[in-house]
Amino acid sequence: MKEMLTINNLTKSFGKKTVLKGIDFKISEGEIVGLVGANGAGKTTIMKSILGLASYQAGEITIDGKMVSTTSHQALEEVGALIEYPGIYPFLSGYDHLKLFSENNTKEELDEIVADLHMTDYINRKAKSYSLGMKQKLGIALALLNRPRLIILDEPMNGLDPQATRDVRELVLKLSKKGTSFLISSHILGELEKIVDHFIILNKGKIIQAMSVEELNAGHSHYVMLTTTDNEKAKEVLTAAKYELQVDRSVKIKMSENADLANIIQVLYDNKIQINDVRHQENDMEESLLNLLDQKDGGKA
Amino acid sequence: MLTLVKQETFKLLKKKSTPIISILLTIFIFGVAIISKMNPKIFGAKDLFVGGFGATFFIVMIMVASASTIVAMESQFGTIKDLLYRKYSRGAVLSSKWLTVFIYSIYLNVLVIVASIVAKVIFLPDLSFAEKVGNQMIIGALTTSLAGNFVNLWLIISLVLLLASAFNSSGASIAAGIGFYFLTSILSGIQILVITKWDWVKWNPLNMMNLSNQLSAGKTFEALTHLTTNQLIWGNLGYTAVFLFLGYLVFKRKNV
Image (cartoon, rainbow over all chains, first blue to last red):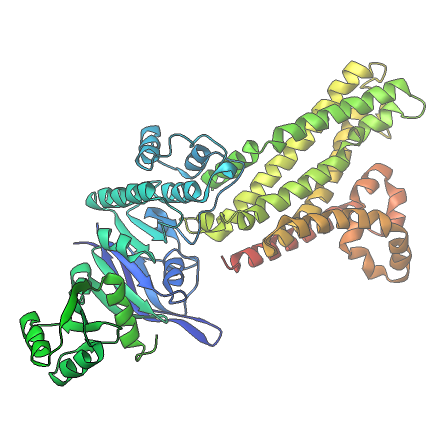
């Protein structure tokens, strides 16, 4: 597939502090990429660099083959964005905002954006009366103007209610199917998981992992949690039997090919320990990601 | 660029204050004309007409506020990123704002001329258009006076635009613009003394603000400013260009 965005060795410093360290990634036409990382990892700085809002010391950013920098903006003709928080003129209505920034959309297209985001009820009201979620939706609507081929959304789900979150998700998927590429950052990984093709995981200005949703999910673990008549003794005997135990009040055993529940029960039975309760636990994507960040951080949280 | 100017004009026209200002300015001019009609000995119709019925002062205040707001509001409302990430350069974005302010300043001056003529026709029919001030007819004198004020106005506006680019709120630039305007009157006496002692001080920007007075008073004012009218015009334009250029440099380096 055709590459829409290419970032090569992007490096940026603020004074002596290097905030982006050789960032490399690509987004193809119609692909949705999630940018994930802790606060201060460099997500917004990358997005601002792509949008020609922030300068960088080294590297290259191209959109559809055309270079982007603070002084070279031509390639941004095909880009829409919502960065940090939506900028809203309080004296304009929502629809005035759309008319203001739309350069080539028909009225029907504007109405379609409004309908897709369920903004019809308040689009003609002055934006100063909007709630946080309404402003956020207007910010997203503005990013969709002028039929962009690449859309950059920084924390788009901020302040949105569940219905609005679903509206945005469906809109992103609909546009992606038509060939629009997306770069989306979010702290709500569960939301990103539902729409992105790939994750780029950032930590302290570096990409520590680029992987598909399936690959990140593969890091999931399955645990069995037992409550027994003597948990401490159960932990001792299971550890001695080479099972991998997690720190927990109950007896939490990481399941693997070698860890079979029947064998675990047998070990406990042999040691005269009765099982009072058995529960299963899956760790989710968030935990997988935190584990990944933890590993790359040398075990420090 | 045309798209950007259209966008800036759209925002300006959508502000409630824009039509209200035009209406208030017209009412003010009509009001002063009525007062002149009622008290012709105290408020001479000819002098008032030539001075645009005192509306030039309000043009300065309105334009200082508008110029400051048009730049600073983008940072204030967080819309600066939406303007700057698009295909246009920062220079084009800023120039479109300058151009919109320029168009607005022309509009307000034309409004004052038209409203002054209408006020004269309705309320001061005894004042003839054929009357002269110096060797100019009154409409010519009104236009000359407004033209001088316009050049001075742009010196102030350029300073305001520079400060509005530097700060994220309009307050500081509005205060500086108004302060600069009043400083001219406050320091005029001292300035004359200082210029007499050190001739080079005549090139300071406050002295440039005497252009409209010199255009009205003619040669007599030259003795105070130590500059010819042409020198004052070029001085004003030079300072305006410098302030605009500095504003551009600040805007270009602005962190968003």
